[in-house]
Image 1 (cartoon, one colour):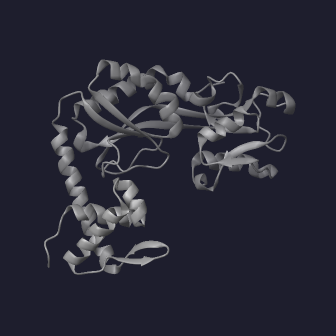
Image 2 (image 1 turned 180 degrees about the vertical axis):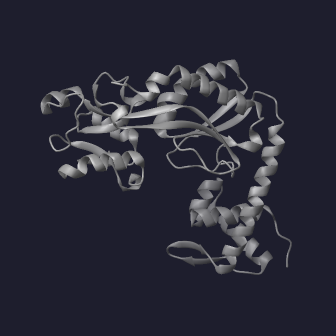
Image 3 (image 1 turned 90 degrees about the vertical axis):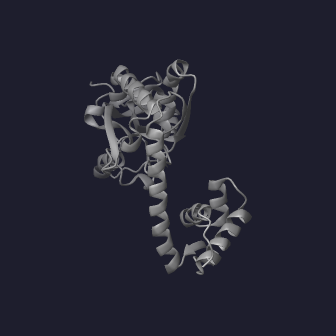
Length: 303
């Protein structure tokens, strides 16, 4: 067996996860021919074919699936080593990769970051605005703002507040349909809702349960709260929105407050191996303080 180039393992995992050379090349920031060459070299070194090639992409063979499990163990160990090494870094500088939902990052986090970055000019922050759950263990992000507490034993979860969701509608829409605060009548006026990718989310289930008895169906659905907010603000329909997004917008009226819709805890989550990292501690404390200041905005009206 030829000697394995350990860098080829990263290319192998990227193809496993992306399903094609082109998608893996975009993830890795290299040409797809480079990815193909690396995979070929790894297969030669191991003496085994690792992928079945088809029009649908690259699918691991049985041998490839075995190698993937071992490769992911190696990746986890390497990431743990990196986290341990960085855990002793006491500088309030360097890069911190933060992930949060699209609306939470743009309407809560980013507007407050200038204060933090003015105090720590050597700090560089990468914000990944993504509704999917990035892996903290695999260093896809250093710290996350999440609306569900993780269950993994290697993660630290710090409660920093509460997010409220209410039903909102645009003022002219309310006048047109005689929609009044304290009521939600999806059989009387149009509703904006969630697409099927959100079907298992508590908020989507609440809206579905509210519409089902009267046989109402949303006139517009989206997998983006930002898009739903735009639709509600445009007067297309009433919709469920986070209060931090809707309350500052004077075009909107709260029909049902979070107390009658839903509230969710806001968690700051990071891997325990980096909890002593100076830039992480500074960021976590800053977010906790800012969330406390914005408690009323985040939780929404009690009326």
